[in-house]
Amino acid sequence: MQIRQIKPEETYALRHEVLWPEKPLEYVMLDEDADGQHFGAFRDTDLVAVISLFMEMEVARFRKFATRPDCQRQGVGTQLLHRVIDEARQAGAQLLWCDARLSAADFYRRFGMEPEGAVFFKGEILYSKYVLKLTN
View: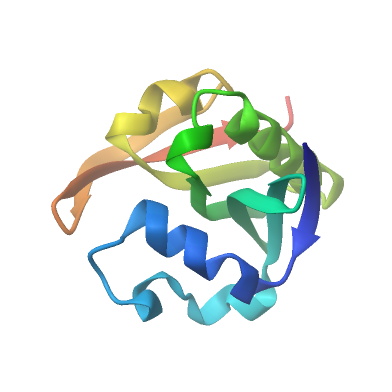
């Protein structure tokens, strides 16, 4: 598997398919996509997972993390998130966070991420903010 930086528009189809298939494609496009770094995990030439990283001062946020269903639970997302954590650290971030679906909470906890604040809904899906301190 290869992880490399990709263009924002290369993330859209997988974001849509995995995260919000019942919504129009435009729903997964972010106004700030042009300002972020986007990474894809490839098996041969197939894009199997995507994640987008956004920096604001010393705080990094990742969004639209999606792994093709037939590639989940195979370490693809783990490798991709490790890459984003490394990128955030190298960029000088002190903190990394995301809005995580509660169904994925155990995955984020394995990276040392902790919930912060109240649980909330996006549509009918429960979320919580998860935070990782990148410095001691």
